[in-house]
Length: 276
Image 1: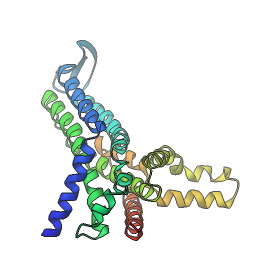
Image 2: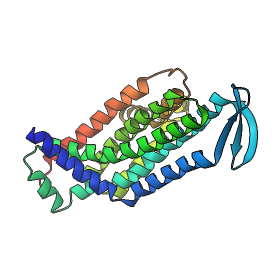
Image 3: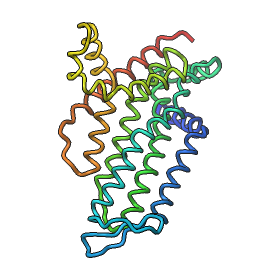
Image 4: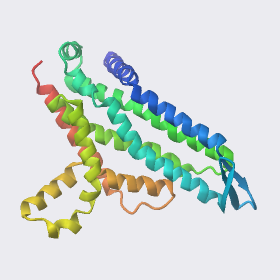
C-alpha cells in the first residue's frame, strides 16, 4: 500500500508539472471553443425524421440523412483529435523525461524508496493522465453536444477516446526512449514527428521494395516497420470504429502495443543502468 501511495505521489507531481505547461491550457481552450461552435453555430433541424437540414452560422446547407451528418462531423473531430492530440501532447510532455535527468531532480527521485523501473513508470503514467483528461474532454464533450442537439447517440464515436490515448502512449514510449538516451526534448519531438510522417510510407513498403537499391534498404524498412508504432494504420482503425465499419485487421494495434512495450522496456532498462 505504501508503495502504491509513493507511485501515486510521483504520478501526481508529474501531472501537475505537465499541466503547468501552456500547451495543455491551449488544448483545453481549443476543445471548449469546438464545443461552443457545435452548440451555437451548428443547427441540425429535422425535415421528415430521416433527413435534416444543416445550418452553419445561420446559412442553410444541403439536406442529408441525420445519422450521416453526425457521423461525418464526429469522424472529422476524431481525425483531428488523433493526430492533433498526439502532437500537442507531445509538445507538453516531451521534456518530462529530460527534465527528470537534470542534476538535482534525478537525485531526489532515485533517493525515494522505490525501484527505478517504478519511478520511470510513475513518470510515464503521470504524463499520460493529463493527455487522457484532455482527449476525454474533447471527444466526450463533443459527443454529448451533438447527441443532445440531434437526438443521434452514435456510441462508436467514443471508441476514439481509447484509440487516441493508446496511440499517444505508444508514441510517448518512443519519445521516452529517445529522451532517456539523448536528454533532449527537441530530439524526441523530431524523432516522433518523423515516425508519424513516414508511417504511411512504411505501410506501403511492399509497393516500394522494387525501387530500393539494395537488400540493406529492404531489411531496414522491414525492421522499422515492425519495431515502430504504426500510427497510419492505427488512424485507419480509429476511422473505421468511428464510422461503425468493420475493422479489416487488428494486427496493427497488437503489434504496435508490443513495439511500445519493447521501447518502454528499453527506456526503463537504460534508466535503471544509468549512474546518477
